[in-house]
Length: 193
Image (cartoon, rainbow, N blue to C red; front, side, top):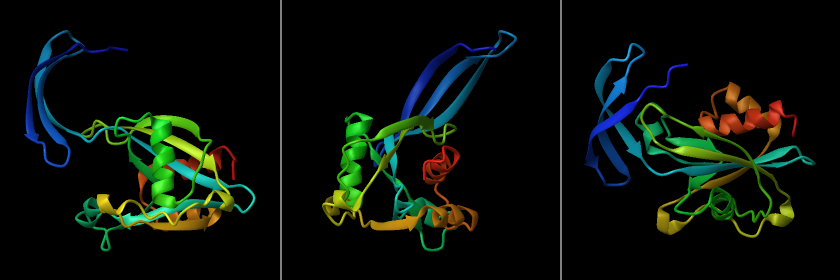
């Protein structure tokens, strides 16, 4: 397997508004040893974490529903997306981040999480690595309504769904978020719920 040598020639900041959009010019070594110069744009929004809460006894999962502008401008007529709870690390370690996000978004205070894998979600254009977690929940862990932080403009609906209904929502197109599909399929493949 050939691992090419990469030399960064120039990095330009195209936008530093919400997150950072960079244009990177680089030389990449081809299999025959020659070099090719290319330019690509990369969007850097930081790394994140995502979690799927599940209850084995009731056979349910906790998901969220919120407006996502990029989906709205790309054909989602309502802009609403059903997702697993997620957030940016903001200089926290992934486990602390996901515990904080879970409480903010869903109202569940969890203490034990299981990291299942990491993945680049859109490696052709976005730098983000997402840390994937699962955790069992019970109704006794519900300490607040959830819904996200108002100061961050979050308006999140918390959904408790039967696991099999959530799987069916992938098939019928109601769940179209990749990270959520990956975690639901993980629970299914591992026969956890």
